[in-house]
Image 1 (cartoon, rainbow, N blue to C red):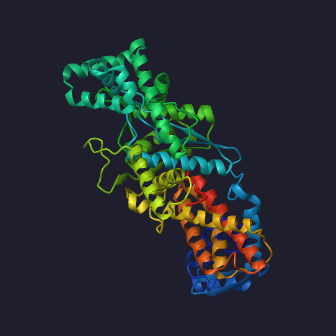
Image 2: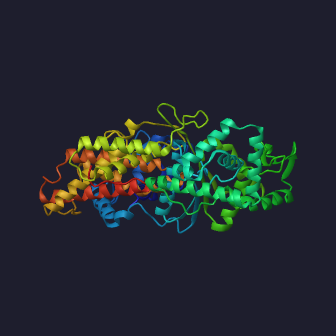
Image 3: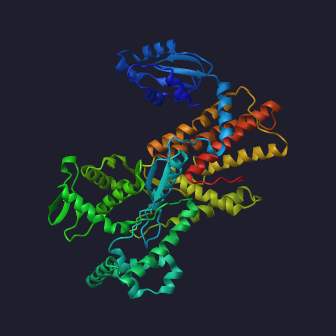
Length: 561
Protein backbone atom coordinates (compact mmCIF):
# COMPACT_ATOMS: atom_id res chain seq x y z
CA UNK A 1 0.00 0.00 0.00
CA UNK A 2 1.11 3.55 -0.74
CA UNK A 3 0.54 5.00 2.74
CA UNK A 4 1.22 8.57 1.64
CA UNK A 5 -1.48 8.24 -0.99
CA UNK A 6 -3.83 6.55 1.50
CA UNK A 7 -3.41 9.44 3.93
CA UNK A 8 -3.86 12.05 1.18
CA UNK A 9 -7.09 10.45 -0.05
CA UNK A 10 -8.69 11.08 3.34
CA UNK A 11 -7.62 14.70 3.59
CA UNK A 12 -9.70 17.59 2.30
CA UNK A 13 -7.85 20.87 1.83
CA UNK A 14 -9.57 23.49 -0.29
CA UNK A 15 -7.59 24.31 -3.42
CA UNK A 16 -5.08 21.47 -2.95
CA UNK A 17 -5.27 18.28 -5.04
CA UNK A 18 -4.80 14.75 -3.78
CA UNK A 19 -1.56 14.45 -5.77
CA UNK A 20 -0.17 17.60 -4.16
CA UNK A 21 -1.11 16.35 -0.70
CA UNK A 22 0.49 12.96 -1.34
CA UNK A 23 3.71 14.69 -2.44
CA UNK A 24 3.76 16.74 0.76
CA UNK A 25 3.27 13.79 3.14
CA UNK A 26 6.73 12.78 4.39
CA UNK A 27 8.49 10.56 6.89
CA UNK A 28 9.56 12.84 9.79
CA UNK A 29 13.14 12.58 11.10
CA UNK A 30 11.79 12.00 14.61
CA UNK A 31 9.16 9.27 14.48
CA UNK A 32 8.19 9.61 18.14
CA UNK A 33 5.58 12.18 17.12
CA UNK A 34 4.30 10.24 14.13
CA UNK A 35 5.10 7.78 11.37
CA UNK A 36 4.10 10.23 8.62
CA UNK A 37 3.64 13.99 8.71
CA UNK A 38 1.96 16.67 6.62
CA UNK A 39 3.43 20.21 6.90
CA UNK A 40 0.57 22.72 6.74
CA UNK A 41 2.60 25.89 6.08
CA UNK A 42 1.87 25.94 2.35
CA UNK A 43 -1.88 26.07 3.04
CA UNK A 44 -1.78 29.21 5.17
CA UNK A 45 -2.09 31.64 2.25
CA UNK A 46 -4.85 29.66 0.54
CA UNK A 47 -6.94 29.12 3.67
CA UNK A 48 -5.98 32.42 5.35
CA UNK A 49 -5.27 30.68 8.64
CA UNK A 50 -2.16 29.88 10.62
CA UNK A 51 -0.46 26.54 9.92
CA UNK A 52 -1.11 25.50 13.54
CA UNK A 53 -4.85 26.18 13.22
CA UNK A 54 -5.03 24.29 9.91
CA UNK A 55 -3.22 21.28 11.39
CA UNK A 56 -5.58 21.21 14.39
CA UNK A 57 -8.69 21.38 12.20
CA UNK A 58 -7.45 18.61 9.91
CA UNK A 59 -6.50 16.43 12.90
CA UNK A 60 -9.97 16.83 14.40
CA UNK A 61 -11.71 15.79 11.17
CA UNK A 62 -9.37 13.04 10.00
CA UNK A 63 -11.13 9.61 9.87
CA UNK A 64 -9.27 7.16 12.10
CA UNK A 65 -9.42 3.53 10.91
CA UNK A 66 -7.52 0.25 10.99
CA UNK A 67 -4.71 1.72 8.93
CA UNK A 68 -4.20 5.17 10.44
CA UNK A 69 -4.77 4.84 14.17
CA UNK A 70 -4.01 8.42 15.23
CA UNK A 71 -3.76 12.00 13.92
CA UNK A 72 -2.41 14.90 15.97
CA UNK A 73 -1.34 18.51 15.38
CA UNK A 74 2.06 19.79 16.54
CA UNK A 75 3.48 23.20 15.59
CA UNK A 76 1.87 23.38 12.17
CA UNK A 77 2.43 19.71 11.33
CA UNK A 78 -0.29 17.08 11.08
CA UNK A 79 1.25 13.84 12.37
CA UNK A 80 -0.13 10.38 11.66
CA UNK A 81 0.32 7.16 13.58
CA UNK A 82 -0.29 4.02 11.58
CA UNK A 83 -1.20 0.54 12.79
CA UNK A 84 2.27 -0.97 12.85
CA UNK A 85 1.21 -4.60 12.91
CA UNK A 86 -0.99 -4.36 9.81
CA UNK A 87 1.64 -2.18 8.10
CA UNK A 88 4.35 -4.76 8.80
CA UNK A 89 2.25 -7.69 7.62
CA UNK A 90 1.22 -5.96 4.42
CA UNK A 91 4.73 -4.71 3.58
CA UNK A 92 6.39 -8.06 4.21
CA UNK A 93 3.75 -10.03 2.32
CA UNK A 94 3.99 -7.71 -0.67
CA UNK A 95 7.79 -7.85 -0.93
CA UNK A 96 8.01 -11.62 -0.49
CA UNK A 97 5.12 -12.22 -2.91
CA UNK A 98 6.49 -9.95 -5.65
CA UNK A 99 10.16 -10.92 -5.28
CA UNK A 100 12.34 -9.53 -8.06
CA UNK A 101 9.34 -7.56 -9.33
CA UNK A 102 8.96 -5.66 -6.07
CA UNK A 103 8.99 -1.97 -6.93
CA UNK A 104 8.01 -2.59 -10.55
CA UNK A 105 4.78 -1.38 -12.11
CA UNK A 106 2.83 -1.20 -15.38
CA UNK A 107 2.54 2.59 -15.16
CA UNK A 108 4.38 3.05 -18.46
CA UNK A 109 1.80 1.03 -20.36
CA UNK A 110 4.34 0.16 -23.05
CA UNK A 111 4.91 3.80 -24.04
CA UNK A 112 8.31 4.46 -25.60
CA UNK A 113 11.07 6.41 -23.90
CA UNK A 114 14.14 6.99 -26.09
CA UNK A 115 17.35 7.49 -24.13
CA UNK A 116 20.43 8.87 -25.88
CA UNK A 117 23.49 8.07 -23.74
CA UNK A 118 27.20 7.24 -23.81
CA UNK A 119 27.59 8.43 -27.45
CA UNK A 120 31.16 7.27 -27.91
CA UNK A 121 33.48 8.78 -30.48
CA UNK A 122 34.77 6.41 -33.12
CA UNK A 123 38.56 5.92 -32.96
CA UNK A 124 38.85 7.45 -29.48
CA UNK A 125 39.23 5.51 -26.21
CA UNK A 126 36.69 5.72 -23.41
CA UNK A 127 37.95 8.09 -20.72
CA UNK A 128 36.64 8.69 -17.22
CA UNK A 129 34.59 11.64 -18.48
CA UNK A 130 32.33 9.17 -20.33
CA UNK A 131 31.42 7.40 -17.09
CA UNK A 132 28.42 9.49 -16.03
CA UNK A 133 26.56 9.54 -19.34
CA UNK A 134 27.05 5.78 -19.70
CA UNK A 135 25.94 4.57 -16.26
CA UNK A 136 23.32 7.30 -15.76
CA UNK A 137 21.69 6.54 -19.11
CA UNK A 138 21.83 2.79 -18.50
CA UNK A 139 20.24 3.17 -15.05
CA UNK A 140 17.41 5.28 -16.48
CA UNK A 141 16.95 2.64 -19.20
CA UNK A 142 16.47 -0.10 -16.59
CA UNK A 143 14.27 2.09 -14.36
CA UNK A 144 11.87 2.95 -17.18
CA UNK A 145 11.74 -0.69 -18.28
CA UNK A 146 10.99 -1.67 -14.66
CA UNK A 147 8.04 0.75 -14.67
CA UNK A 148 6.43 -0.72 -17.77
CA UNK A 149 7.82 1.60 -20.44
CA UNK A 150 9.52 0.41 -23.60
CA UNK A 151 12.95 1.95 -23.29
CA UNK A 152 15.04 2.43 -26.43
CA UNK A 153 18.74 2.85 -25.68
CA UNK A 154 20.52 4.90 -28.35
CA UNK A 155 24.28 5.20 -28.69
CA UNK A 156 24.53 8.28 -30.92
CA UNK A 157 28.02 7.54 -32.22
CA UNK A 158 30.43 10.36 -32.95
CA UNK A 159 31.25 9.05 -36.43
CA UNK A 160 31.22 12.21 -38.56
CA UNK A 161 33.77 14.96 -39.12
CA UNK A 162 37.16 15.94 -40.47
CA UNK A 163 38.90 14.04 -37.66
CA UNK A 164 38.38 10.87 -39.70
CA UNK A 165 40.16 12.45 -42.64
CA UNK A 166 43.03 13.23 -40.27
CA UNK A 167 43.06 9.66 -39.03
CA UNK A 168 43.18 8.21 -42.55
CA UNK A 169 45.99 10.61 -43.43
CA UNK A 170 47.90 9.57 -40.29
CA UNK A 171 47.39 5.85 -40.98
CA UNK A 172 48.55 6.12 -44.57
CA UNK A 173 51.65 8.06 -43.46
CA UNK A 174 52.72 6.08 -40.42
CA UNK A 175 50.27 3.24 -39.84
CA UNK A 176 50.60 -0.50 -40.14
CA UNK A 177 47.51 -2.72 -40.35
CA UNK A 178 49.04 -5.50 -38.27
CA UNK A 179 50.14 -3.09 -35.53
CA UNK A 180 46.72 -1.41 -35.43
CA UNK A 181 44.94 -4.77 -35.20
CA UNK A 182 47.24 -5.71 -32.32
CA UNK A 183 47.14 -2.34 -30.53
CA UNK A 184 43.44 -1.72 -31.13
CA UNK A 185 41.86 1.57 -30.12
CA UNK A 186 44.99 2.85 -28.41
CA UNK A 187 47.07 2.35 -31.58
CA UNK A 188 44.45 4.28 -33.56
CA UNK A 189 44.41 7.06 -30.97
CA UNK A 190 48.22 7.27 -31.03
CA UNK A 191 48.09 7.90 -34.79
CA UNK A 192 45.54 10.68 -34.30
CA UNK A 193 47.57 12.28 -31.51
CA UNK A 194 50.68 12.21 -33.71
CA UNK A 195 48.83 13.85 -36.59
CA UNK A 196 47.57 16.61 -34.29
CA UNK A 197 51.08 17.23 -33.01
CA UNK A 198 52.80 17.28 -36.42
CA UNK A 199 50.12 18.61 -38.77
CA UNK A 200 51.03 21.40 -41.15
CA UNK A 201 48.92 23.15 -43.78
CA UNK A 202 49.52 20.44 -46.38
CA UNK A 203 48.52 17.65 -43.98
CA UNK A 204 45.37 19.54 -42.97
CA UNK A 205 44.46 19.95 -46.65
CA UNK A 206 45.04 16.24 -47.20
CA UNK A 207 42.82 15.40 -44.21
CA UNK A 208 39.98 17.52 -45.58
CA UNK A 209 40.31 15.72 -48.92
CA UNK A 210 40.10 12.29 -47.24
CA UNK A 211 36.98 13.37 -45.37
CA UNK A 212 35.48 14.54 -48.67
CA UNK A 213 36.26 11.10 -50.12
CA UNK A 214 34.43 9.45 -47.20
CA UNK A 215 31.37 11.62 -47.82
CA UNK A 216 31.47 10.84 -51.55
CA UNK A 217 31.57 7.10 -50.99
CA UNK A 218 35.20 6.43 -51.94
CA UNK A 219 35.81 2.69 -51.46
CA UNK A 220 39.26 2.88 -49.86
CA UNK A 221 38.45 5.80 -47.52
CA UNK A 222 35.21 4.21 -46.38
CA UNK A 223 36.88 0.84 -45.96
CA UNK A 224 39.39 2.37 -43.57
CA UNK A 225 36.67 4.26 -41.72
CA UNK A 226 34.57 1.10 -41.26
CA UNK A 227 37.66 -0.75 -40.03
CA UNK A 228 38.33 1.95 -37.43
CA UNK A 229 34.66 1.79 -36.41
CA UNK A 230 34.75 -2.00 -36.03
CA UNK A 231 37.82 -1.82 -33.79
CA UNK A 232 36.23 0.95 -31.68
CA UNK A 233 32.93 -0.88 -31.16
CA UNK A 234 34.71 -4.12 -30.22
CA UNK A 235 36.71 -2.16 -27.65
CA UNK A 236 33.78 -0.27 -26.11
CA UNK A 237 31.72 -3.46 -25.96
CA UNK A 238 34.18 -4.93 -23.44
CA UNK A 239 33.58 -1.91 -21.20
CA UNK A 240 29.81 -2.01 -21.70
CA UNK A 241 29.77 -5.66 -20.66
CA UNK A 242 31.65 -4.85 -17.45
CA UNK A 243 29.23 -2.01 -16.65
CA UNK A 244 26.14 -4.05 -17.67
CA UNK A 245 25.18 -1.51 -20.32
CA UNK A 246 23.14 -2.32 -23.43
CA UNK A 247 21.80 -0.41 -26.44
CA UNK A 248 19.08 -0.95 -29.00
CA UNK A 249 20.53 1.40 -31.61
CA UNK A 250 24.03 2.48 -32.65
CA UNK A 251 22.89 5.00 -35.26
CA UNK A 252 25.40 7.84 -35.13
CA UNK A 253 25.85 11.23 -36.71
CA UNK A 254 26.83 9.78 -40.08
CA UNK A 255 23.47 8.04 -40.42
CA UNK A 256 21.77 11.43 -40.67
CA UNK A 257 23.89 12.70 -43.58
CA UNK A 258 21.03 12.33 -46.08
CA UNK A 259 18.40 13.40 -43.55
CA UNK A 260 19.71 16.91 -42.89
CA UNK A 261 18.76 18.51 -46.21
CA UNK A 262 15.00 17.95 -45.67
CA UNK A 263 15.38 19.72 -42.31
CA UNK A 264 17.17 22.65 -43.93
CA UNK A 265 14.49 22.78 -46.64
CA UNK A 266 11.70 22.80 -44.06
CA UNK A 267 13.37 25.57 -42.08
CA UNK A 268 13.70 27.61 -45.27
CA UNK A 269 10.07 26.95 -46.33
CA UNK A 270 8.80 28.08 -42.94
CA UNK A 271 10.82 31.28 -43.10
CA UNK A 272 12.99 30.35 -40.15
CA UNK A 273 16.35 30.26 -41.92
CA UNK A 274 18.31 33.50 -42.17
CA UNK A 275 21.72 34.38 -43.56
CA UNK A 276 24.33 35.77 -41.20
CA UNK A 277 27.88 36.44 -42.43
CA UNK A 278 27.42 33.77 -45.08
CA UNK A 279 26.14 31.16 -42.63
CA UNK A 280 22.54 29.94 -42.27
CA UNK A 281 21.01 30.47 -38.83
CA UNK A 282 17.71 30.40 -36.91
CA UNK A 283 17.36 33.63 -34.93
CA UNK A 284 16.58 32.81 -31.30
CA UNK A 285 17.17 36.28 -29.84
CA UNK A 286 13.41 36.70 -29.08
CA UNK A 287 13.77 33.63 -26.83
CA UNK A 288 16.82 34.93 -24.98
CA UNK A 289 19.33 32.78 -26.84
CA UNK A 290 22.10 33.27 -29.35
CA UNK A 291 21.37 32.15 -32.94
CA UNK A 292 21.26 28.43 -33.72
CA UNK A 293 23.81 27.83 -36.47
CA UNK A 294 22.43 25.39 -39.08
CA UNK A 295 24.98 25.61 -41.93
CA UNK A 296 28.45 27.13 -41.97
CA UNK A 297 29.38 29.65 -44.64
CA UNK A 298 30.96 26.78 -46.65
CA UNK A 299 27.68 24.83 -46.47
CA UNK A 300 28.92 22.30 -43.87
CA UNK A 301 26.44 21.00 -41.32
CA UNK A 302 26.84 21.23 -37.54
CA UNK A 303 25.84 19.29 -34.44
CA UNK A 304 22.53 21.17 -34.32
CA UNK A 305 21.70 20.20 -37.91
CA UNK A 306 22.28 16.53 -37.17
CA UNK A 307 20.46 16.65 -33.83
CA UNK A 308 17.40 18.21 -35.50
CA UNK A 309 17.41 15.44 -38.09
CA UNK A 310 17.91 12.79 -35.39
CA UNK A 311 15.02 14.07 -33.25
CA UNK A 312 12.64 14.01 -36.23
CA UNK A 313 13.82 10.51 -37.23
CA UNK A 314 13.33 9.19 -33.69
CA UNK A 315 9.83 10.60 -33.45
CA UNK A 316 8.88 9.11 -36.81
CA UNK A 317 10.50 5.76 -35.99
CA UNK A 318 9.57 5.22 -32.34
CA UNK A 319 6.72 7.68 -31.67
CA UNK A 320 8.25 8.26 -28.25
CA UNK A 321 6.50 9.55 -25.15
CA UNK A 322 9.79 11.13 -24.07
CA UNK A 323 13.21 11.42 -25.66
CA UNK A 324 16.04 11.92 -23.16
CA UNK A 325 19.50 13.25 -23.96
CA UNK A 326 21.97 12.25 -21.23
CA UNK A 327 24.67 14.82 -21.96
CA UNK A 328 26.88 17.00 -19.74
CA UNK A 329 25.60 20.37 -18.55
CA UNK A 330 28.07 22.20 -20.81
CA UNK A 331 25.62 21.47 -23.63
CA UNK A 332 22.66 23.19 -21.92
CA UNK A 333 22.50 25.99 -24.51
CA UNK A 334 22.85 23.60 -27.45
CA UNK A 335 19.82 21.56 -26.42
CA UNK A 336 17.75 24.61 -25.54
CA UNK A 337 18.44 25.89 -29.05
CA UNK A 338 17.61 22.58 -30.74
CA UNK A 339 14.39 22.13 -28.77
CA UNK A 340 13.34 25.73 -29.48
CA UNK A 341 13.99 25.35 -33.22
CA UNK A 342 11.83 22.20 -33.31
CA UNK A 343 9.07 24.08 -31.51
CA UNK A 344 9.31 26.91 -34.06
CA UNK A 345 9.06 24.29 -36.81
CA UNK A 346 5.67 23.38 -35.39
CA UNK A 347 6.64 20.03 -33.85
CA UNK A 348 4.17 19.58 -30.95
CA UNK A 349 6.37 16.83 -29.51
CA UNK A 350 9.27 19.25 -28.94
CA UNK A 351 7.97 19.53 -25.36
CA UNK A 352 8.73 15.81 -24.89
CA UNK A 353 12.47 16.28 -25.45
CA UNK A 354 14.50 16.40 -22.22
CA UNK A 355 18.14 17.26 -21.69
CA UNK A 356 19.24 15.16 -18.69
CA UNK A 357 22.28 17.22 -17.73
CA UNK A 358 24.98 15.90 -15.42
CA UNK A 359 28.19 17.13 -13.82
CA UNK A 360 31.75 16.20 -14.68
CA UNK A 361 33.86 13.38 -13.25
CA UNK A 362 37.51 13.79 -12.33
CA UNK A 363 39.95 11.91 -10.15
CA UNK A 364 41.43 13.28 -6.94
CA UNK A 365 44.53 14.45 -8.81
CA UNK A 366 42.30 16.36 -11.25
CA UNK A 367 43.09 14.04 -14.16
CA UNK A 368 40.52 14.08 -16.94
CA UNK A 369 41.40 16.62 -19.61
CA UNK A 370 42.33 15.17 -23.02
CA UNK A 371 43.75 18.52 -24.14
CA UNK A 372 46.27 18.59 -21.31
CA UNK A 373 47.29 15.02 -22.08
CA UNK A 374 46.48 13.66 -18.63
CA UNK A 375 43.38 11.75 -19.69
CA UNK A 376 42.52 8.69 -17.61
CA UNK A 377 40.99 5.80 -19.52
CA UNK A 378 37.84 4.31 -18.02
CA UNK A 379 39.10 0.73 -18.36
CA UNK A 380 42.08 1.70 -16.18
CA UNK A 381 39.77 3.12 -13.49
CA UNK A 382 37.69 -0.07 -13.53
CA UNK A 383 40.77 -2.32 -13.43
CA UNK A 384 42.29 -0.39 -10.54
CA UNK A 385 39.04 -0.59 -8.56
CA UNK A 386 38.73 -4.34 -9.18
CA UNK A 387 42.35 -4.97 -8.14
CA UNK A 388 41.98 -2.83 -5.04
CA UNK A 389 38.73 -4.64 -4.18
CA UNK A 390 40.52 -7.99 -4.57
CA UNK A 391 43.27 -6.98 -2.14
CA UNK A 392 40.73 -5.76 0.44
CA UNK A 393 38.58 -8.91 0.13
CA UNK A 394 41.60 -11.22 0.29
CA UNK A 395 42.71 -9.48 3.48
CA UNK A 396 39.28 -9.47 5.13
CA UNK A 397 38.23 -12.98 4.07
CA UNK A 398 41.22 -15.01 2.79
CA UNK A 399 39.19 -18.24 2.72
CA UNK A 400 36.47 -16.81 0.48
CA UNK A 401 35.91 -18.81 -2.71
CA UNK A 402 35.70 -17.02 -6.07
CA UNK A 403 37.53 -13.96 -4.76
CA UNK A 404 38.19 -12.73 -8.32
CA UNK A 405 34.52 -12.96 -9.26
CA UNK A 406 33.47 -11.15 -6.07
CA UNK A 407 36.14 -8.48 -6.60
CA UNK A 408 34.81 -7.86 -10.12
CA UNK A 409 31.30 -7.20 -8.77
CA UNK A 410 32.61 -5.06 -5.93
CA UNK A 411 35.08 -3.05 -8.02
CA UNK A 412 32.73 -2.41 -10.94
CA UNK A 413 29.91 -1.66 -8.51
CA UNK A 414 32.08 0.93 -6.78
CA UNK A 415 32.71 2.73 -10.08
CA UNK A 416 29.01 2.78 -11.01
CA UNK A 417 27.78 3.75 -7.54
CA UNK A 418 30.39 6.50 -7.29
CA UNK A 419 28.89 8.12 -10.38
CA UNK A 420 25.25 7.64 -9.36
CA UNK A 421 25.09 8.31 -5.63
CA UNK A 422 25.03 12.10 -5.76
CA UNK A 423 22.55 14.34 -7.55
CA UNK A 424 23.37 14.01 -11.25
CA UNK A 425 24.12 17.70 -11.79
CA UNK A 426 26.96 17.74 -9.24
CA UNK A 427 30.57 17.47 -10.34
CA UNK A 428 32.17 14.30 -8.96
CA UNK A 429 35.69 13.78 -7.66
CA UNK A 430 36.18 10.01 -7.74
CA UNK A 431 38.21 8.52 -4.89
CA UNK A 432 39.25 4.85 -4.95
CA UNK A 433 39.53 4.73 -1.16
CA UNK A 434 36.12 6.29 -0.54
CA UNK A 435 34.41 4.20 -3.23
CA UNK A 436 35.70 0.97 -1.67
CA UNK A 437 34.97 1.85 1.96
CA UNK A 438 33.08 -0.96 3.71
CA UNK A 439 31.68 1.50 6.26
CA UNK A 440 30.75 4.51 4.11
CA UNK A 441 27.85 5.42 1.86
CA UNK A 442 29.10 3.11 -0.86
CA UNK A 443 28.01 0.16 -2.95
CA UNK A 444 30.53 -1.97 -1.07
CA UNK A 445 28.68 -1.27 2.17
CA UNK A 446 25.37 -2.18 0.52
CA UNK A 447 26.82 -5.33 -1.09
CA UNK A 448 28.30 -6.39 2.24
CA UNK A 449 24.89 -5.88 3.84
CA UNK A 450 23.35 -8.14 1.18
CA UNK A 451 25.98 -10.79 1.85
CA UNK A 452 25.23 -10.54 5.59
CA UNK A 453 21.50 -11.01 4.98
CA UNK A 454 22.15 -13.90 2.59
CA UNK A 455 24.37 -15.57 5.20
CA UNK A 456 21.62 -15.36 7.83
CA UNK A 457 19.08 -16.90 5.45
CA UNK A 458 21.54 -19.63 4.40
CA UNK A 459 22.26 -20.61 8.01
CA UNK A 460 18.54 -20.60 8.78
CA UNK A 461 17.77 -22.87 5.82
CA UNK A 462 20.54 -25.27 6.86
CA UNK A 463 18.96 -25.48 10.32
CA UNK A 464 15.48 -26.02 8.87
CA UNK A 465 14.15 -22.56 9.81
CA UNK A 466 11.77 -20.80 7.41
CA UNK A 467 10.70 -17.15 7.13
CA UNK A 468 7.06 -16.46 7.95
CA UNK A 469 4.76 -13.43 8.04
CA UNK A 470 3.02 -14.48 11.23
CA UNK A 471 1.45 -11.33 12.64
CA UNK A 472 4.15 -10.39 15.13
CA UNK A 473 4.08 -6.78 16.27
CA UNK A 474 7.27 -5.07 15.04
CA UNK A 475 9.72 -3.56 17.50
CA UNK A 476 11.19 -0.10 16.85
CA UNK A 477 14.15 -1.33 14.77
CA UNK A 478 11.99 -3.70 12.74
CA UNK A 479 9.43 -1.01 12.05
CA UNK A 480 12.02 1.55 10.93
CA UNK A 481 13.49 -0.97 8.48
CA UNK A 482 10.06 -1.98 7.15
CA UNK A 483 9.08 1.65 6.69
CA UNK A 484 12.21 2.20 4.60
CA UNK A 485 11.50 -0.93 2.52
CA UNK A 486 7.93 0.20 1.86
CA UNK A 487 9.29 3.35 0.18
CA UNK A 488 10.91 1.47 -2.70
CA UNK A 489 8.05 1.60 -5.25
CA UNK A 490 7.64 5.36 -4.70
CA UNK A 491 11.43 5.81 -4.86
CA UNK A 492 11.67 4.11 -8.26
CA UNK A 493 8.74 6.16 -9.60
CA UNK A 494 10.35 9.38 -8.33
CA UNK A 495 13.71 8.38 -9.88
CA UNK A 496 12.01 8.09 -13.28
CA UNK A 497 9.99 11.28 -12.88
CA UNK A 498 13.08 13.32 -11.94
CA UNK A 499 15.59 11.37 -14.08
CA UNK A 500 17.55 10.78 -10.85
CA UNK A 501 18.97 7.26 -10.24
CA UNK A 502 20.60 8.79 -7.14
CA UNK A 503 17.22 8.31 -5.41
CA UNK A 504 17.64 4.55 -5.80
CA UNK A 505 21.29 4.68 -4.71
CA UNK A 506 20.38 6.58 -1.56
CA UNK A 507 17.54 4.14 -0.87
CA UNK A 508 20.17 1.37 -0.89
CA UNK A 509 22.32 3.08 1.73
CA UNK A 510 19.33 3.99 3.92
CA UNK A 511 18.01 0.42 3.91
CA UNK A 512 21.49 -1.02 4.49
CA UNK A 513 21.99 1.24 7.51
CA UNK A 514 18.60 0.31 8.97
CA UNK A 515 19.11 -3.39 8.30
CA UNK A 516 22.48 -3.39 10.06
CA UNK A 517 20.96 -1.68 13.09
CA UNK A 518 18.19 -4.32 13.10
CA UNK A 519 20.82 -7.08 12.68
CA UNK A 520 22.91 -5.83 15.61
CA UNK A 521 20.04 -4.97 17.99
CA UNK A 522 17.65 -7.85 17.32
CA UNK A 523 18.49 -11.52 17.71
CA UNK A 524 17.45 -13.42 14.59
CA UNK A 525 18.54 -17.07 14.65
CA UNK A 526 18.71 -17.10 18.48
CA UNK A 527 15.15 -15.77 18.95
CA UNK A 528 12.11 -17.92 19.89
CA UNK A 529 10.47 -19.81 17.02
CA UNK A 530 7.77 -17.25 16.19
CA UNK A 531 10.05 -14.21 16.41
CA UNK A 532 12.82 -15.98 14.48
CA UNK A 533 10.47 -16.80 11.57
CA UNK A 534 9.23 -13.20 11.52
CA UNK A 535 12.74 -11.72 11.57
CA UNK A 536 13.84 -14.08 8.83
CA UNK A 537 10.96 -12.72 6.73
CA UNK A 538 12.22 -9.20 7.39
CA UNK A 539 15.75 -10.28 6.40
CA UNK A 540 14.44 -11.85 3.19
CA UNK A 541 12.44 -8.71 2.37
CA UNK A 542 15.46 -6.45 2.93
CA UNK A 543 17.67 -8.62 0.72
CA UNK A 544 15.02 -8.66 -2.03
CA UNK A 545 14.60 -4.88 -2.04
CA UNK A 546 18.35 -4.22 -2.00
CA UNK A 547 18.98 -6.68 -4.83
CA UNK A 548 16.24 -5.07 -6.93
CA UNK A 549 17.64 -1.60 -6.28
CA UNK A 550 21.24 -2.53 -7.07
CA UNK A 551 20.12 -4.34 -10.22
CA UNK A 552 18.44 -1.13 -11.45
CA UNK A 553 21.77 0.65 -10.99
CA UNK A 554 23.63 -2.09 -12.87
CA UNK A 555 25.46 -3.44 -9.80
CA UNK A 556 25.94 -7.14 -9.07
CA UNK A 557 25.28 -8.71 -5.67
CA UNK A 558 27.77 -11.31 -4.34
CA UNK A 559 26.31 -14.05 -2.12
CA UNK A 560 29.41 -13.93 0.09
CA UNK A 561 32.08 -11.31 0.78
